[in-house]
Image (cartoon, rainbow over all chains, first blue to last red; front, side):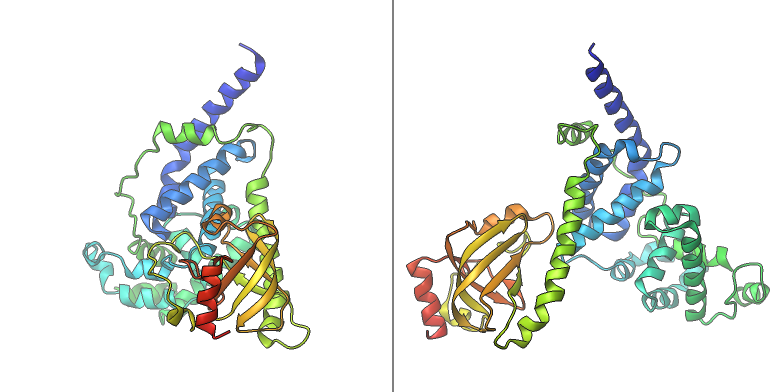
Amino acid sequence: MPDTDRMMEDRRARFEALVGEVSDPVQRYLLRRARPDVADDVLGDVLLVLWRRLDDVPVDDPIPWSIGTARRALANRRRSDRRKLALVDRIRAIDPPTVAADPSASGDHPELVAALAGLPETDREVLVLWAWEGFEPRELATVLGISDNAAANRLSRARRRLATALGRQESLPAGQDGYMDAEEDRI
Amino acid sequence: MSDDLRSELRALDPVPPAAAMEPIPASRLERTMSQSTHPTTRRQAPTRLAWAGGIAVLALVAAFVVPGLVGGPAAGPLVLDLPGDDAMASCLPVSAEFMADMSPAFEGTVTAVDGETVTLSIDRWFAGDTGATEATMTAPSGMEALIGGIEFRVGDSYLVTATDGTVNYCGYSGPATPELRAIFEEAFGA
């Protein structure tokens, strides 16, 4: 087999392995933020970018990079389609029974949704990436295309603002003053 | 409190971990891999161009939309958007009465079609005259093909109406045929 064919075969195998690894988190990311038909369209854009930029995808941790690609592809798409549901609308559209399935938290939801809605979009985005996608600052940095430090700062600022919006005393990161009070309030 | 906050936010997740994702069919991957003939080069042209296009559009809007609205003798180009893919979803027959509320309306000759942007030199105003002699109309990113909803060709004349800065399709804009011009003249009493 000629070298070029072997390289192409290798490339295809790497792409298929990459998609196997990132398709679940990428699909979740898109479905959390767009209607299913739009999510599916944007998934096509993401796949194409992954294929074309295969050599740029970090081998050891491709998920944040791929989500970052999905984020840009979705933003691109949004600019061309004003009918998309905003993130807050999406949150409001959650099926109530699903929410009620967790009785310990259900009572807080209207407040939480209202508090989120009152935050700047950058805060909301980083909080949701942190909670739903489960990203830590280093991964957030990759997704958002900013430095690790900036990502950590953005997250802690957003957490403080959300806590403040919820009328909770603690405006400091976990482990500092106010932490115990907050626990007691919740219990 | 951070863990609390995180788990509270997780309760709002519209796609909880229990929801299974569909595997991507092999045929779809195959289609993706067949879309680029030179996959090993690091060309990012499509993405980069789209971004560059977006920036160019922003710059155009920043530069011209304000003077365009203000009007006056030295008005910059009229800047309009071309509609997205839902524009032709439902079209009623063209009515001069309905058209009369649309503004701006003009007749122009296409001087350039560049990717997502069509440039026209304005030959005649029917409504909403800003004093501009040129109009740029930009399709949403990635929608180049839809400019073909009306096929804009350099050198041809078109009659265009817009509402809220977006070009009206559905027969309210199109090649400058005598029939369409007659409707424009009736609508705008020109």
